[in-house]
Length: 198
Image 1 (cartoon, rainbow, N blue to C red):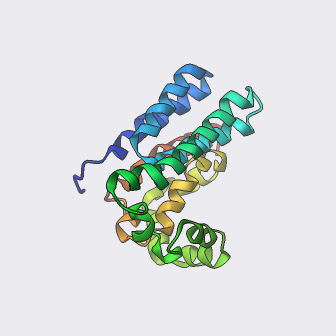
Image 2 (tube, rainbow, N blue to C red; image 1 turned 120 degrees about the vertical axis):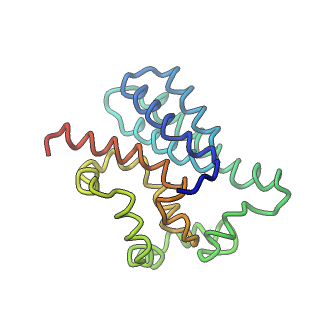
């Protein structure tokens, strides 16, 4: 295991806390957990956005405070942090990861977005042996039970896509901190499947 200190290692605690508070319908404390999640790293805003999507799709609570507020706040924060804040304070034109890890999708943000919408991109992702190995290593023996709870796994879809689309081999390895953000979601999906009685 590589001992590279990174704030992303804090994300499992706050993801599990946010999900617990969401389940208990404690809105104020839930917002506080989301605030701490946003403070960890700019890409963690994608998890917050998916929690917001949960709230938008929920039938057991008001959709505006539980869904729309976190979803919009996460998207606004992500765009601000990734496209202005980080490049501005690092004195560079664009986020370093955009050119480094996703340069194969395009040179500018709009080209990367178009690349994400291309079926050829996703066909290449699905056929990449490194991606297949990464998913098998990440899920391990929990692959089948976790996949039986797709509504829970929805939380990690953007982060998983971030790894699968990356041009850096280190993002396709479980031996770095990169996979930590997804592990609590896999755990929650497995528990949800077991509770359903698979």
